[in-house]
Length: 368
Image (cartoon, rainbow, N blue to C red; front, top):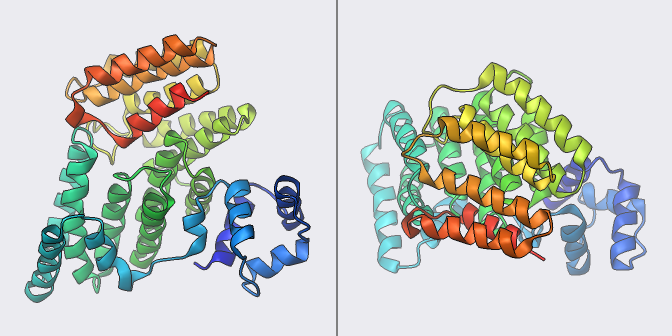
């Protein structure tokens, strides 16, 4: 996808016309942009310069790094190896990749087993642990992409890998979410296509980062199919969080109701996997959403429902719920008490269990 297509998708995700986008840029950046100029961008007749890229970044809620360029498959291996700081680690990754190419690599069934394991481990391991291990798997699977089924595997691994970077870092997290979507498209597997987009949307919406991209990916998931699924549920709840953070209470609540209906048809019995959304996890989504909307009664109810079924083996999610309570206190006007409550909850969790999402929640609680 080039920058013109991306501008178009981001604009449509906001429900704006080309004229409205031009007007928003003119209003916030003192420009004199016409609708025709926006049309030329979207048709790739003209590429926005630095000033307009910065303006688009601001009005469309997308990091400027995302607008500045794309990375294709030929850069896939370099990107993964480059994410590891130590040269010896990059060397090991490259060696694993070439070895996999020469030996054929794991079977599709073995890859599905690996994905199931990572889905479970993600729920309790720290981001650094997951990032280091998944980067190696990505280098290996990159050598097996002649098999369309392995594009589906790669897309789900990329989505997990993206989660190990802050959502606000457009050059990393958003890039990997968008590449995961393209990889899923290569697989022809509609379930994977919806899931990776939905997982990205809820991750970004929950973190409060790159909301324009969250909306685009969620809308793409919704356009692929309306059959109730965990991917579709994640997409709708991601859009709900984006709406809440923009102050659009009506849309947020409407989307949350839609999410509840999807959950009724797609909620999972599996309790401890990133590929699952059981009742307790649905309530974690709702707890933060309602705290952001200032609905204290609804948020507390969702927290109590979540705690009733949350496995004891997942203390990080208990920390999430306590930090939601801190956010409620801050939103009610007692910022000092809210920040203190959130800091105490985070301090009670062993540092190796911390996640990037928890750190971003802390920033939201303490934001002026």
